[in-house]
Image (cartoon, rainbow, N blue to C red; front, side, top):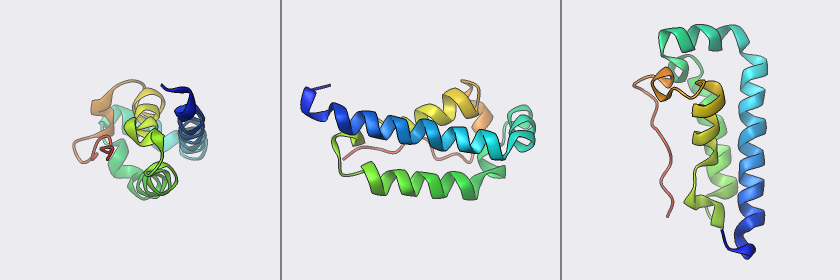
Length: 97
């Protein structure tokens, strides 16, 4: 990552980590069931969609748009590194410009 773009990437990644940690804290029981049933996105759709929109608004026009840190953290932490746990309705990573 070029030096000039690093700060935007750091901020986007930090935002994503905190947002996913908040989901983990607020919805612990739902998340355990959602992982087992492979439908995390369906049961947390409103929260995930709000977070995705906020992330897009904050970082969609910055250098950080080239990598979807929120998607990365959702898969890594929320879904325990199992993309299928988010379920078939999950829209996937956002595409950069």
